[in-house]
Image 1 (cartoon, protein in one colour):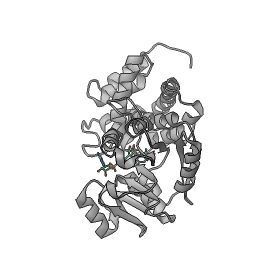
Image 2: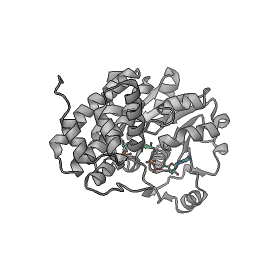
Image 3: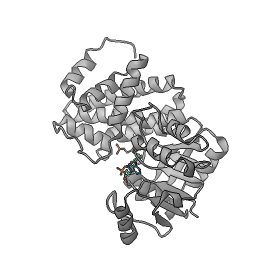
Length: 323
Ligand SMILES: NC(=O)C1=CN([C@@H]2O[C@H](COP(=O)(O)OP(=O)(O)OC[C@H]3O[C@@H](n4cnc5c(N)ncnc54)[C@H](O)[C@@H]3O)[C@@H](O)[C@H]2O)C=CC1
Ligand SMILES: O=C(CO)COP(=O)(O)O
């Protein structure tokens, strides 16, 4: 039996699997695509999603989620697919520690990943792993620090120990809402920053957006019960800094391409979580009367309703206020 099972052989699921297996854990990695599984078994690499990285011998490729038996399951699939997967596999996942690795808000329910888990598999222990970590950095063994959030203190401590390695340092919190909102909302801000730089509005404008975006994230998160110190930690501020300043971020790169006038952005087939989260959060903000100007305008731009110039005009025309 493995120590950790991983659902989703995308860039992040594979990077986590490689990291844990190198550090001595027995890992089972499942991809929904049989051809992809065969390729990984044969080449001992995941060239589709994380090219050039060897899969360690203690990482096995599983054929069927039903064969996965570990107490700890990492859910490394996009946020919009989480509810469907969990609902379909509810019985199989009951009683386990389910660690979401996705960063997003479900469009249908408005829930973050731990809320989705709690709803879909009520007798599981939900947790979330979030923070600044490009899959490729992790897979290359570079030092990385993340937030592990779990409301159950004993399970949280056990997960922190199980999932920390020599290069991957996990900080523990019980604030699952804060951790998941920081990770979801920073993707929207990364798109905003990409749009700004892509449209040639400058780095000063990006710094302004990051700062006001962070204030906006805090407003939304507080109203949902998050603790401000969680937002100031790795899963909020830390990840926002990374993804708002690096072209390695798909959210930032998507904004950058749109801002430069390429209407397809990073193109179909790339996971850009912030697009869906902007839509979900803009809708909630409107409904609940929460002031979220940057998120609202990102949603309007990525859905093609307005262009970046119009978004800039609208932001700059807002009434002057205290900081
Ligand atoms: N790539 C990165 O550097 C990081 C990604 N994340 C988060 O991890 C999540 C996954 O991202 P990536 O691995 O990068 O994406 P990816 O695009 O590389 O892979 C996504 C994987 O999910 C699988 N998948 C999609 N729908 C599925 C379904 N219904 N059932 C089963 N499998 C399904 C796909 O086949 C694919 O293998 C996202 O929420 C992302 O924000 C978090 C930290 C870092
Ligand atoms: O969340 C990430 C790094 O922490 C990855 O960001 P992207 O999904 O924008 O590539």
